[in-house]
Image (cartoon, rainbow, N blue to C red; front, top):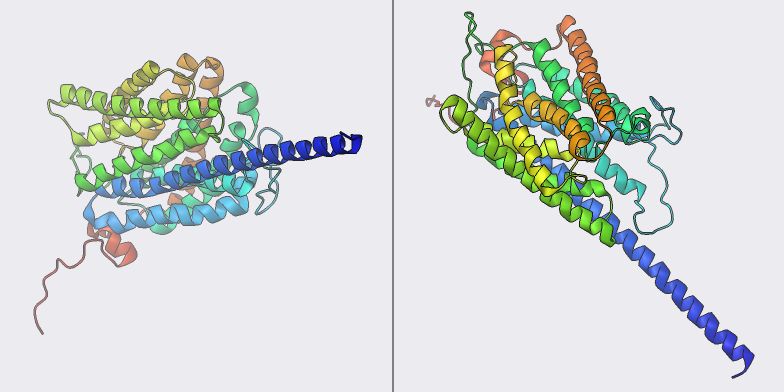
Length: 429
């Protein structure tokens, strides 16, 4: 064979190998980004779950108000996270505490390959997390906050408060340098929202009639446990986008194995949380309580979120069991302190989120001191900033509706519409 023929053969083989390698990179890029897209949609679907849980656990006369707040959290939050939040959370050049890369910054797509995320896709996944952090507060302040005040809160938290503390870890800030670990957001998302909700509940004060003057309390059951139960199932399903999606890739044996383990750990912790909350509440109150079991499932999901990639299946069960006990104790503590949190937002997201951060140090192999510092820092950041904001709004008489409006219901007083219309009887004129 002549030399030029040999050169030609090697050239063809080389080009073919390059084409195969390039094709594999493009396919891996497409699969990883499509995987994250599906997970982002699942997390966005969690907004429906939150809306159902919160509305079902509250009075029917406030249903429109609660649903509207969940809509605003996502709609206004998406715009704020695009214009400001994402740039605060993922700046090009960070200083560890606070940095900003410019309004509407998302970034340009790089060369396709396995594990490479399109910046647009990464933004979509992250905005779903931002909306989740904001909507946690909705249930804690239900039934007595002005809609305009809640709109201000949602804008501030999604545009500023959440992205800044998110940058501290996920954007490479000071907590990341310290060794703090939060895989999918037990602290960064859930504890932040839970402690923000606690601040709102404290500043607002309890709903009218919730606590007696002699120190006792009155139960104010929600209007539909059916809707709330549906909401918990939706949230549980959505969590398979929240936790497995935080692996950020599925191509490759290591990524695939990690995603599968994360999904199983998520399932086990949720199940253990629900069973333990039911059992502990049954022992304490002498009856099985559905709402406690529902909150136990959510607490188990929150507790495993920080460490679902780092613990064994058995450890995931234990984390869920502890979460189930903590959520019942947290609800009891709030009642003793006369703090009105209608849906248990702080016990579910704040308390179980703290436990998730600590459990990551105990079982996940990450530095315990860094976990303690990060858990306290993020929780205090959420509580202090939102306490200040709610206090300012209260001082301006811009926070809480009047007594007559609260008695009538926020659906009518704030929105002039009802979720369950058509029950009034009209006489013919």
